[in-house]
Length: 334
Ligand code: GZL
Ligand code: ZN
Image (cartoon, rainbow, N blue to C red):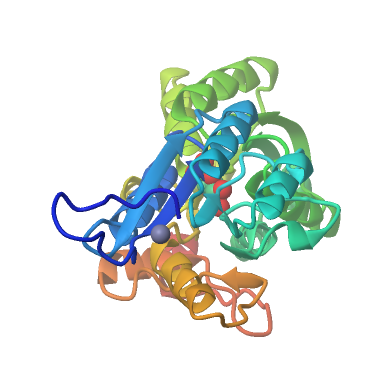
């Protein structure tokens, strides 16, 4: 690769440093920060890597520029966490022409020919949305709340991103299956500031909101602030005027809010993709075949029992049935 550094004296050491160019979406959320940290700690110098990191500030054009720079620098691998699914064919063809393998991380790319990337690591956003909808159905059914009295607003993620597409679809299926009222859907860009702004405007438009479906924790933090600033109460008791906030990502701050009853259900999404990415690069270095799709297990809370409880809140059992687990029962019993 073009990035080796020749030692000051003696012959150049065998270049066993692997150079990785990583085009990251941005730093829009706690989840994203954890994802970046996982990559940086995995692809460290002491682990034998040179990581060239680019933060695209959630703009696709910055990612295209970063990838072209990585190609110029003749990196050994390109890691791409794509902000949205479309618009990658041309630049991925340029990487392919330069014989640089591309590993897609987190969100998916929608390309005409999937040989344009070598492999993908991520989580199942549609399953996450379905878990949330199943949880809401289990909760309202157990509380005897009629579906026609459930008035939901959806603060969506970045439109066209895999996480937004899957999580919105999971909710929309629930609306179709169970008959809830979906009052409005608007993007909160996965950020706290935008989440708060969108919540404020929705509260002005609708006086009957009782469920807020936030497509990530940072939007939930913003929505909670907006709800409380409007003099309303955040909580699970929607039959008595509280506004229920649901969320995704199970970040530390999200789990803290969940255990405090501010977030009713926080659906897991594992940000720690570094180790899996390294496994794949090592396999590719060894000339091995790799799976095209690599799902990162949602078992990131195996240790801490407090967050284990929250984890249990949104676990679907093998049959895809919602199993009302201890803490959910606690919430339902009130
Ligand atoms: C989820 C990831 C999303 C997170 C957000 O896989 O793409 O992007 O849910 C982040 O926090 O902005
Ligand atoms: Zn090299």
